[in-house]
Amino acid sequence: DAKTTQPNSMESNEEEPVHLPCNHSTISGTDYIHWYRQLPSQGPEYVIHGLTSNVNNRMASLAIAEDRKSSTLILHRATLRDAAVYYCILSEGRDDKIIFGKGTRLHILP
Amino acid sequence: GAVVSQHPSRVICKSGTSVKIECRSLDFQATTMFWYRQFPKQSLMLMATSNEGSKATYEQGVEKDKFLINHASLTLSTLTVTSAHPEDSSFYICSARENGLPNEKLFFGSGTQLSVL
Image 1 (cartoon, rainbow over the protein chains, first blue to last red):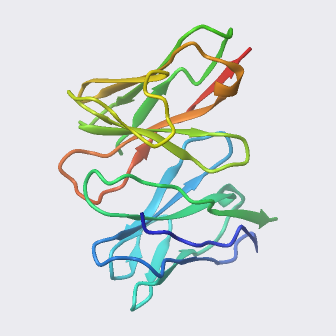
Image 2: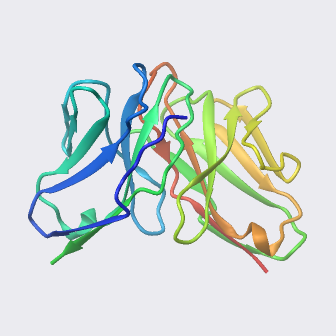
Image 3: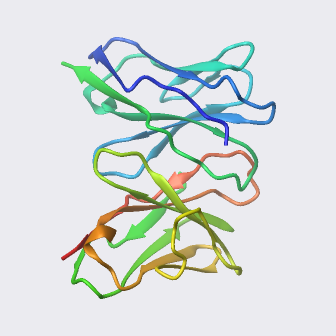
């Protein structure tokens, strides 16, 4: 499985944008970049995913580097409810397994 | 949106007993479901891939005779922890991807906290 590297933890102030980085230098041409987050004592929740182009949805934006070796999850205006562990994952194909790394624990300061 | 329902959310059992956890996709069909376990302060670890109508595929190091998986329909997969011991105490999470949508997102259940006394 292709691997990703994320910072262990990050801090941000409430109502400010947050940029969560992810490195995936061994990504293959068919790997999709997925982001999930997990709030305490809950199952993970889908955030966003993309292949080559930047993506936007109601939760976040995903900026993918031109060489696809890194990506950034952008939360435009963080709230206290965004405090969670964020996982950047590479996935290929319909039945491909989602293998979780250690993720980034995001702390939001009021 | 699509929902995966997992039951029970919490179970306490005695050592040596078996526990069954159910995972249902409520408004979509899922040929494949995944089972994870998570210890405190750690990431999710994939245990097995559950395939409707066929045998599950287990990850290396996961005992298939201890963690029995049955995927009897396109909306239901079950994980049975047989002869549970205290070291099996963990947070178990299932997930599913809607059929026919390659590279699409996974939907996760809310998890089952198993405590073995």
